[in-house]
Image 1 (cartoon, helix red, strand yellow):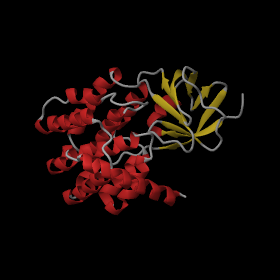
Image 2 (cartoon, rainbow, N blue to C red; image 1 turned 45 degrees about the vertical axis):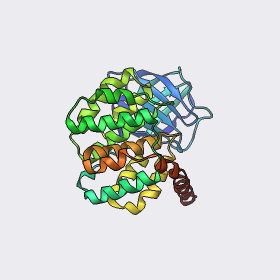
Image 3 (spheres, rainbow, N blue to C red; image 1 turned 135 degrees about the vertical axis):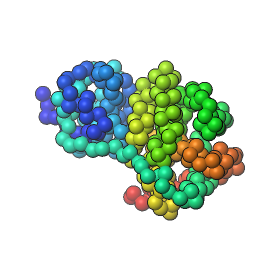
Length: 299
């Protein structure tokens, strides 16, 4: 057997990786990531990713050397004893990393949060269609008055194309944001999402929503929440980094944070839910500037 590929593994999937060997199936793949579902009681998802891929909370990041081709959907692997064996290749855990779980946003002054909401809603386009925006408004209202959230959640789950539809990304951003705020409704929303998601969206999205319920997220989302909490002047760079994630996943996650702030603070809800067509049309130029500035800083 060829020399193992070293990986940096997420501590969020440690039990599946260090436990006894189990079968796992590749359920989805892109040019930079392969997603495997382990045949264990949790149906743990593990994502094998290149060093430049988005570091999802369940990622095994290739530590330098990268195979010529990542595994394709349908392939069967063995996961356990600190490694993944797949298609004749061995991916062995060389070190661990811990996915971000942002906290402390609830201690931030409302005026600071309002400034962040004002900048974000004025500079970043809402990624949802009219039906999605109506579902978000109903979700915020339901949580505000203690009504069932399941109808609004079902209208968002699976809304949009891709491995993680936009509606799912909005829910994930909201769940992480509510967790960071310490909001008690995070558990209510999380329970509704996890009850409906398996029958409403993709396998990959279900697994990532499970991480969001625990408050775990990608580093770019954690950076945005940190900028909101600590340094509003850092919002352009943090927003640009998050918006660069996926085709529109970053935009969905960012909007989900705004939804969380609207849920937790009634006075912010109007600004989040009433961003109109003029704001969204003007956002294109602002978004281009933010993305260009981020790319220039990284160069």
